[in-house]
Every structure is written in structure tokens, then in C-alpha cells.
Length: 414
Image 1 (tube, rainbow, N blue to C red):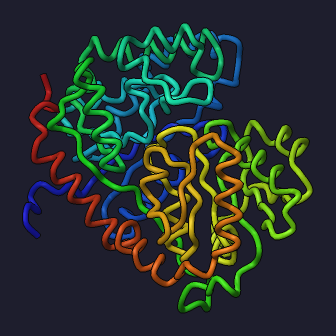
Image 2: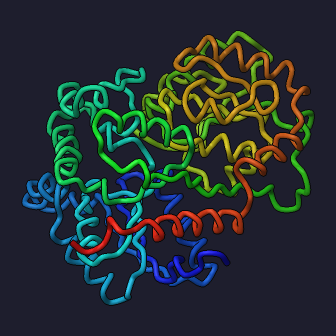
């Protein structure tokens, strides 16, 4: 293999779990399994933000540890030395791990890469969203905009902590010495545009490395189910929260209540809007709770469509990718990676983000013209774009690592 001398064999994966599981956890687990299945030595440093739920002292110390954790630096340095780690791959550091993990790598002279699952380097809430609309005040001005608007969880204190974490490490130049993976070219271009103003990272060290996507057809299926054989239903799958456009989806189904031909809506997932959603949903909406991946994928594969109504850019449109791998058309809000994942008339339809009437019209059109979609063609195109399979995902990951290690002088001990 060309460049094999720059490929690592002993890798340390670093990840902080949020209180509620999400896409970042899935990518972390998938890439860990991918590396282990192919014989690489994989070591893991995992933390959870539930650590902050302990004593009053722990809660009081959290803001300081979120900025710089000496515990993280000490423990990661020890792991690097003990296992002779050749490359460190970081996923999430917020809050309890902190960017001090990078200081550990710099001190040990080990190349380090972080997958950017969101836009938090320039936006404390990570999604360039405020008040249900795209907002880029922080990259245009300063992180203080997020504090003023309480962008992180609606909290002044938490927003200040998050802004200070990234502001402090900008001053240290931390991210200029870290290689960065973005899941899509859209993300890369957006981050490069933001970086022209604030110079947070080295543009030569940012690479596109798509997230692994796995959505095999249900057991016993050799091809996707024809549209005529599918159940009259549309699936919403994801966290039940504002930025995913859940309120838009529920409002659209309210508008569809008078239409006897409207498909029912299946809502799969959990999140902060769960109680509100159940209280406000109409009779044609059914809540499934969190579903295991195999069960969710089979439900998607038997449905007319999947709806992805995100109000923000999304760093990677996982649900649309999974749906299309199953041959299922997607109704997607026309914004960022979600909209870019859909080719209108071929793999689904787009609608204006945050517009229930536009979504309701799209649902009616799809229900009326479902026969125009070819599930086999949708799956074929998705396999080309998203689903090269484990071998292709592994090759992409190794190529990313090769690029990081080949260009790692900035990570050497100073």
C-alpha cells in the first residue's frame, strides 16, 4: 500500500458522551468497530458529561475543567506512553474532557486529528442557529454574541463557559496544530469561510472524511420494496428537538388532518420536545420512542418516505443517507447538508425550512406521485454517494490518517 510507512497501527480514540445519545456517539462507535475489525490496535479514552452530576464541588469545578482539564492531560499522556500510541483521533471534548487532550498529544509529539461533528469552533451552540433561523453572528463578529443571546442551552452561564472554552484555545493557538476532519465538502467550505475572519485553524490541515453510513436492507431482502408495496406512512427519525424541525413536521401534519389521503407520521426518537410533541400531535401521528437500528431501518424501508426537516446546516445528513440506502425517498428541508443530500424528483423533494405549509404540500405530492420514484435507483445512487461499505469506509479513514501523519510536523514536541 503506498504510503504504508505513514499509516498508524496503534490508535487512541477520544470521546465525550453527551447526556443523551446522538449521532456523534454512533460515528465514534462505528469507526472504533471498523478499526478493530481490521486488526488495528485501538485504545479508548471515554468520558461522559454525566460526571458533572455528582457533588456540588464537581459542579462548581466544571466550568474550569471544561476549559482545561489537568486530569485529561495527565491520563491521556499516560495512555500514549503506555501503549506507544502513533495517532490520536478525537471526536467530542465538550465538556468534561476539554481541549487539554490536544496539549497531551503535543507534549508527547503524537499527531492528532479531530472529527468536527458540528460547527462549535465558531458557534458555541454548534449549529449556526438562533430563534429558528440560521445565524452566523459569532464567526462574523465574536463569540460574545453567543453569550449575549444565551445560545448554549438558553443559559447565560453555560453559554459563557462554552464561548470561553473556544476563545481561550483560540488565544493558545490550539487548533492551528490539530488536523481536522469534516464529514462533507459543504462543512469544509463553511469552516474555511469562517476561518478567514478569525484564523482558528490551519486550512492546510482540514480534510473531508465522510462519516460511515450503514443501513443494510432487512434480512431476506435482495432489493428495496417497490413503492406500491409500501405502507402509507412517513418516518421522522432523530432527536425530538427544535433544531431538527420537529415542530415544523407536527404543524404540517396538523394541516394534513383534513386530507383523507395523507399518510400517517411515525416519530422515532426521544429528546427535550417529547412531552410537548405528544400533547400537540394530531391523531395521524404515532410515537415509537427510541428504536433499535435494525427495527428503525426496516420501518424506513417499508415507508413511503422519511422526513428530514432540519432548521440548521447539519454537519452530516445521516438520516437522509440511511433512508436512501434503503431505497426510500426523502422529504428534506432545503438547507445545508440535508438539502444537498436530496436530488429533487429522483431521491425525494425539498421544501423551505421551517415552513409547515411547504412540507404539507410536499407530503401530498409525494403520496399522490409515489410511483414516480424508483427505490432500486435511489439505493444505487446512495451506494455510490454514501454506502461504499466497510471496506470503503476503512480505506477513507486510513487515507485521512495517512494525510494527517504525513503532514504532522506541527504536532511535534515543542
